[in-house]
Amino acid sequence: MSMAVVGMIAGMALGFAGYFGGFGAFLLVAALGAVGFVVGRLLEGDMDLGDFFRSRDDRRR
Image 1 (cartoon, rainbow, N blue to C red):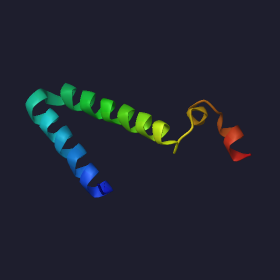
Image 2: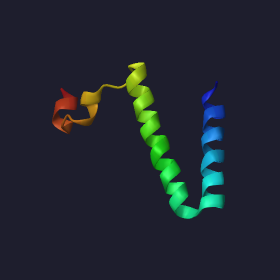
Image 3: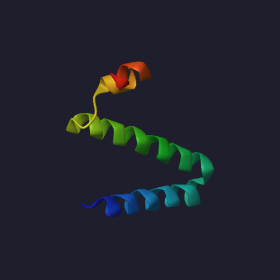
């Protein structure tokens, strides 16, 4: 599935949540989508958990 299709599906989900559930539901869906994205990247191995806990000075080295 291409990234354009994934983005379209995510946008439609946020649109439905905002329309039917209001702004609170929109924020909840957006936050859970972001968490799901990060967990998916961690499971695929594209991202390391240590990336979130290192200081900026450590990343430059």
